[in-house]
Image 1 (cartoon, rainbow, N blue to C red):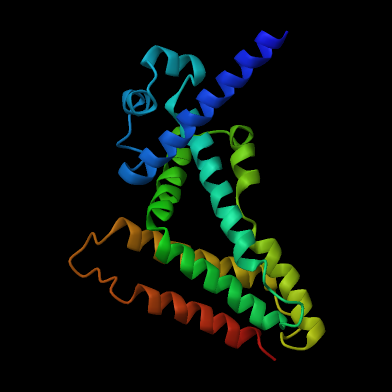
Image 2: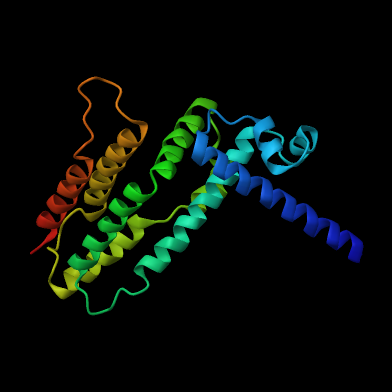
Length: 213
């Protein structure tokens, strides 16, 4: 029984190593450019063994995405841990969008990964039940935003009666689109991303202006 337990532990550690290595390859080279042989070589396992652990490259991509989101979740918790109760709801909303701006600026490889991941899901028509673990790992900024708006209404810093969820989705989608487009790089001659941070900041400031009492 003990030997079986050790074998299971060793297998778990090996699979975790594969996913961590694969995640870094996806971040560095992009999902499309990474093959199963690349993952096997970088992980120090044979290709046949890799296929025994993970039957498809897509399964590895999904698990790697889950791991990457868990890293973001830890950063997210650390970032908001000092947030004091004395801050107004409006101030906390500003901090949430500042966090989004910071993540886009400091983690362009992660933004590119998310863009490629979404395209992979659409192309391969991955069913939602296979993405359940990935979805659970995503940092739910929307829920935090909704709670913060309630706090802001209560402390008088945010206007009551607004469609807070739609406001969040509109601004978050706009910021995501900007970040993903900038991470992909220019396509047309007229594409200019030199002021991408300023554009994202304008979206943030417009939201705050609309929310404030």
